[in-house]
Image (tube, rainbow, N blue to C red; front, side, top):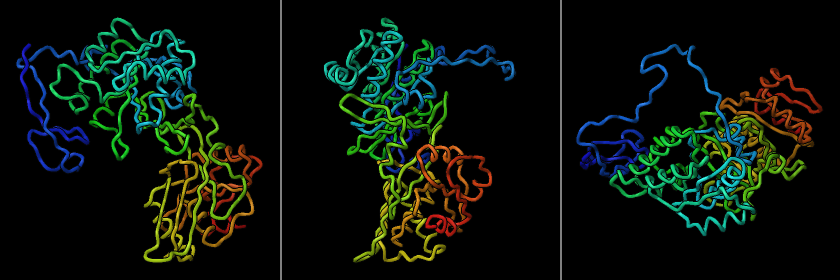
Length: 458
């Protein structure tokens, strides 16, 4: 049917549409992000094939009478990836994986594709950014023996890709990356909001109709967020983020959304010449120093289904000129300012003319408030020049009143501390009263930051 062009204005940050241009997006608040796009629409109404038909025939049914599906999963052959996905890749699911350039997205996906091809059947790897030779060089290095079922297809037209899927009948599809794909039905360049949305919609339809899992690689913006309209994150079943420091080999795969598993689950890998190597004991690999030192305190957070321990280091040194500096790596700068204010008010130390530096060792980044107590104790230890006499773990949220608030999964953190050989754990008093953990470890409860400091230096 004939089509005509239509002009719409979209926000490049969130994908919200407007009938005319305006300076600020009223949905996300960003300025100068509204851009013009031309799309093609049908002149006459046609049959809408996008509607889903369920067992209810379009009528309401009792929720209790609806049957639930036991979702079948594919083993990726990588234990840490299976953990983040909730036990494996669900058939018919769409997984979006993002990360900075060179972080290892294509590496881990190539390893996954080769493992699935060896076990389940044909895998189609659609490469929109690299040639067959480039993908082959990487696969030779990280996979060793390449499966005969591992198929590479350098193509950017989504209609050609779906047509090839009808011929090869893959059991797993990889699209690297969605920003390079385009649809002939959309009159705009590849990578535009309309193209990304149209291509994603066709991939979702293919995955659901054929029960084939699809992995989509996506670029990120300078701020580390997914590039493209936010509606794509709502359309897919799982959103994974691959992160790490360029000067370190540790990589963290985190789940921000998962319809078939837990969110905020993490998987740990180390980048090597042979590809991504799993790190099942993340806590043991992050902590190298087993001795108690001045300005160093071990803390823990519960990520997904396991506790993760890491070392927090602080340095308080007298400022030479100008205003005192506050530098935080791995924790929020705002949290550091809050903790410094509480220490000055409730612990009786003056940091006005002291530079304060805080670093989470190992390249970890944490936004959890459970690390507040460890940060406070590390700063106090550096300022006073004193260290604890025993190997100790500190976990707790510091409130503005100086009191400690409880944290989740304290019992599991205690059990992990016992496994790692720590002598004591400092917890908020409320966690100690609720705890039923037992073992060869001293559990110290503290109501306030002052109580925690006394317990730490005892």
